[in-house]
Length: 172
Ligand SMILES: [Zn+2]
Image (tube, rainbow, N blue to C red; front, side, top):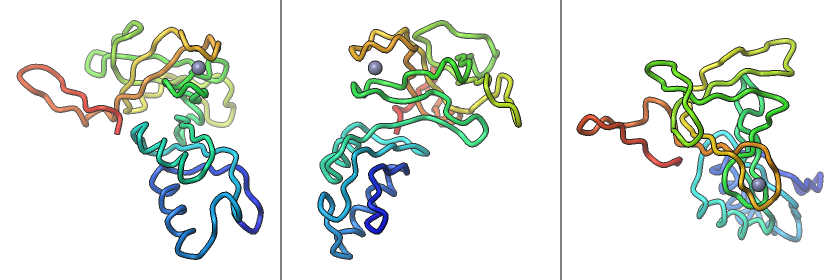
């Protein structure tokens, strides 16, 4: 990154943290030797506190995007308000289903994220079950983007049954 004067880093939260730690060890000064304008995090979740910590560490805005190897960018991209992922509706059709019955759930209900790719030609996916849990909301985002907002709620199977209810842990 120092050699090529990289300005954007796309990685996982833990690796972004490791890179910052290792930079210090090697005497590479963040903000002087490496001047990032933006970090995109993906691959694993992290809390907004951890995201803010990375912003301080790297001195630039840190945002999440949600995607997978099979489907590419799925849920899309966080805007500068950091309140969920704006769904890339021109690229994919996203549905939330009840993981047990397969029934499509309305806005606001948490279920499994199902993706149909609209632009992929080599390996299109039709109603691909991601195994991830989330819920959709109509956008009321201050940024002005009208694309639906996806909130991730962890992995299907990570929930714990408790007295007949399904307890879903927060997005880690
Ligand atoms: Zn927004």
